[in-house]
Picture 1 (cartoon, helix red, strand yellow):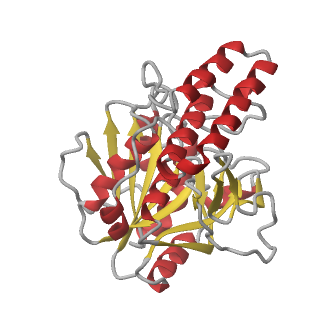
Picture 2: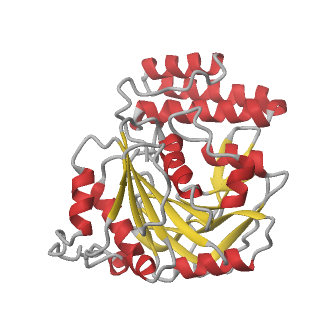
Length: 352
C-alpha cells in the first residue's frame, strides 16, 4: 500500500475495553504501520483521563485477566510512553499525522457522527489511503495490521471497502462474521455471514449484495469515502454500514480479509444482543426499528409492505411480553416511517 492506514475508534465510557483495543495496536503504531485516532463521544465518566493515564504507563501494574485467551494480544498494559497525544477539541482544527490523536466531542451525537469526526480529521491528511473503523470493545490480532495493509495493496483500486474476520472475544476461535452481513430486504433483517462457525473451517468469503461490512471492524479506502461521502448521521444508532454500502454498491466493490483477525465483545457498550427485545435498552431497540425502516424506504421501496408487516409483528411480540409502552412506541415509529429517529433526551446514552 503506497499510502498510510489510520484507525478510528469511538468511545463513550467503557474505558477499560478502549485501553485493551489501543494496547493491541501499539506495536503497529510504533512500527509506523498505522496511526490511531480516538474519538471520545462525550463520555459521562473519567474515560479520557484513564486513557491518558494508560498512554503514560499508569495502568502497567494491572494483572493479566484470568481465563482470558485473547489477553495475550493486549496485555501487559504498557501504553506508549514517550508518544504524545495530539488533542483536538474543535472539528475545525487542521489535520496532522501524529501517531496518536484524541478528539474530544462536547456532545454525544450518536455513533455515525462520532465516527465521522475521526474520519473527517484523518481525511485531511492526503497521505492516508484507508481508514479502519473499529469498535472500542475490539482487540486486534498481532498480525492484523500487516494483513490489512497487504490486502489493500493487492486488491483492485475498485475495491472500496473491506471486512475482516471477527470472532467472539469469549470464544476466540468462533466467528461472529467473516466480515460481511447479508441483508434480507423483505424482513429488513441482517444475518452475519458464518456466525457461530469455527474460524478453522474452510469458508466462503463472498460479499453478496444486498449486504454490508460488519461494522465492528470496517475498512474503507479514502478515495471511496471522498466519493461516496461519510456515514449517515440520520439516526443515533444502527443502519450506517448498510446505508453507506448501498450508496457505494454501484461504483465500489467489497473485499473480505480472512487473515486479519479481530476479537469483539459484541454489544458490550450498547447491550444490543440481549436475548429478547424487552431485555434491551429501549433506545437501542427503537433505534434498530427506525434504522430498518429508513434503509428500506431509501433503498428497498418495493419490499416496504412486507417490512411494515414484519415490524408491526415486532410490536405485537412486545405486547405479548407485557411491554405495552414499548409496543406502542414501535407502532408509532412504524406508522411514521421510522422518522424522526429516536434520540436520547440528554444525548448521554451509549453510542459505541
